[in-house]
Length: 189
Image 1 (tube, helix red, strand yellow):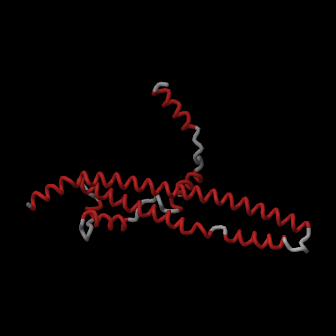
Image 2 (tube, rainbow, N blue to C red):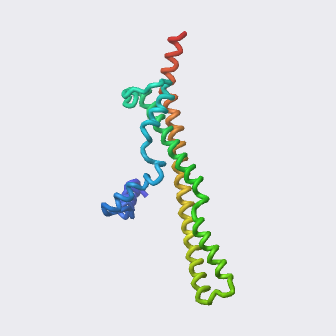
Image 3 (cartoon, rainbow, N blue to C red):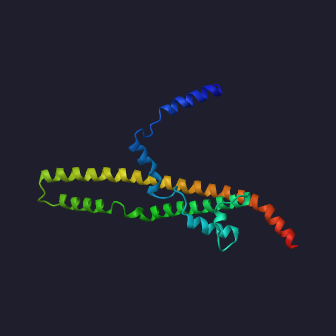
């Protein structure tokens, strides 16, 4: 298959995209990342704090946030990567901390229904109704568990991607800062 054939096939597949078509659907999907904050733009105050550490300066100037040189740009990219990683790991940790409490109400209701079904005065009609409710609760729990697992995998992926981006930013920062550090060492000597 030639490169052109592959490109044509890819274009044909892209035309079949199942993404949102309406403006309302597009508006909803555009807000997906805001649910947890793991992929949103980093907080400027966090970026400034990281930049202060990276540049070893207690005060960050506005010019530091709009650098014109390679060292400044790589430092800013590293600060943003650190802030994004912190946000992604926080979103994952918060999700993992709150995971146990989901579904406690449903478990309590199911327990009450099971207790009622075990009573001798429960009518056949009440038993049938109770069993149907227990089945719906079980389905809901399975669906919620699958959704929670998907969400956990997504947040874990965001954290891995943020770690990877930070590693690349550290490498770029080290490469850009090395000549400056070497020059500073020569001046001191």
